Image (cartoon, rainbow, N blue to C red; front, side, top):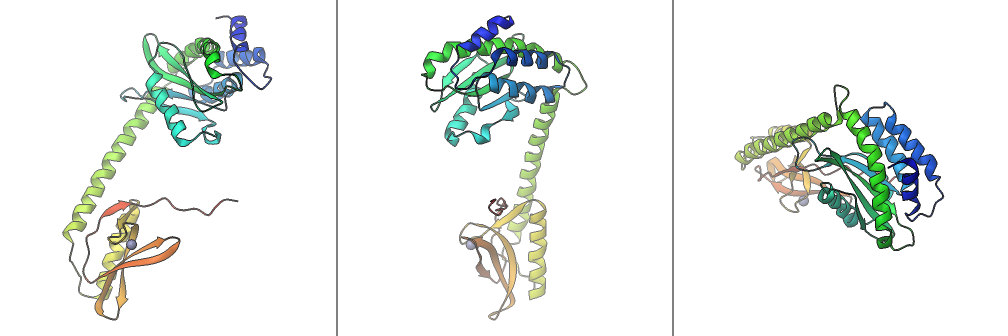
Length: 295
Ligand SMILES: [Zn+2]
């Protein structure tokens, strides 16, 4: 598709703004022919694509070599979209469902937005996708399906060779990099699971234990807490299920103190429990820190 045809393709898509299409396509071509690495190419080209398509959000997705599905490698604007989270996740599902299609996919979502998915191919293989959430304006998005698809096909014909060329140069291609990250994430998840399992088992064996003095019980509670804290874990309060810190407190009726679960409920520090021996300890993830509300 030559530049004039591409400019013509963009004339058909609905827009409220007055972007100079010819100038933006010129910029896109320049970025495509440039020599920046993929990591810089993605955000630079996305910036222009968002303007061209009157799209508030967009992303490039790629499939790591040994993964079954795609992961976003560059994303812009999704946080600011006024779309419900269910619509946003439907958009992601759309990408995962349509990236192997032969041609661009155009699907109306919550008015006035339209989801555009352009499969990125390497010969006959799908390797990723360009996702755009365009503002379809007042026109019925259905009527604009064809112009969107044409414009998307046009920019893909510019972008795909630019991506291929960049994937073939340099020591670390984006695919190798995403592969490595995906592998690492897998390994970490596996490690976390087995570590949690080991902690769970050990704590399970200590059920009913008491260590003979208040100091010993307190020290034991501290050791457990330090171990859990190192790994971002907490114990679950057996009374209310909230992630809690195990402590041993002084108690007039128990010489060696009582084990309590220290947590904050509805914003207030609260203690549950009061066991003279170690209760069943269920390990759970530490809840995210509640930051102060930003002004
Ligand atoms: Zn509780």
